[in-house]
Image (cartoon, rainbow, N blue to C red; front, side, top):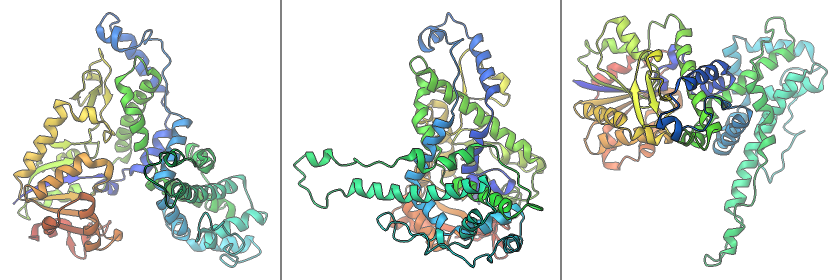
Length: 509
């Protein structure tokens, strides 16, 4: 049986690679001075007599200041996250105690240790005093806010008011409060702008002129969170520190965890990718994007190197079982940027077809001058007569996706999938900004009648509930619904009970 596979970021988290939000936070913490230096050196090597230099690049390009993303761009990122992911921020803050328990497990701290330190150093026991009645948010902003009824957030407030306070703990407490108010405030502003008049004549334009007048002051809504995220990660004494230090460590982890799921870094790419095509008129924004993409590639490569010895099992290792299960690996596509699946297949000595990286990868480089993509394993071999940028983070890069090189990659993978008996998608979320990939699968299901198996996480819901969400997200017509099978697995075992995900695929109809 011929099977086509497609892997998303979820297939690699088990190998120690970061997910999207942490990826974005770490990118903004990087020192980009080395990338600026290399770009300066490359600009100095470009022949100043060519049309490329005289018509496309700005005058004095070799000496123009090279810019990089900074606090202004990250502020816009926070704004976008609050604006578009406000419901998720509110949901996470409403289950603050659960977030704290997860953060404690990540830090390797037993909750009893936190409780014991609190009880020893404070006049009240942990959870004895809650702030749900002492603090009430204006009902115009929100009817129900559960953060102040949280044992953990109440403990933070008690420490602040009880003499064990530290400057860091106060900033973390303020950051959560700003995010709470900012998310609820954005919700209110959106309602006001959309529902300013309950009824108004459609043929009188003056009512349109006053719609959208309200705006949230984002410069304060996430300011403290922004500062804490951009600063170097703090190390706290978890063994001998007082309750304030432990709560600071936990708060730092919770804040990062929240932003790993809500940070909308795609908005940054949306607003800057187009400047790659106009360096002569937008040099500052052009150079920011070049440096950002180079730093991104460097980060991805270093993350893979930092893992060292890979875990001995994972989704890619599981492919070795295909032969004994009667499955022929006929095609592999991925939305990931690295070459981890190729590396593992070589180490385990099982053969796989060429992997098609639909979002680009660490060996892909894009020339915005020619709208062309080249692949090169050795970055030192990339041509230097014209500027090439790493071809990653391409969801918004519509022009490079129209290049002949990428068109062939998409069409080639589609044809390979057509020749398969079934498709298996692992760790890919079918997000809205991946519509260029989602459409490919919708066409395969609806027009080619391909059976599709989606391997997802059991903690995200039952097979049926996740199937309903997937059909809606992919906009699959009802008559093709039966072609989709959802396999919600346990993250650690990649199985349902005693059956592994590949065994379920092999047995499926």
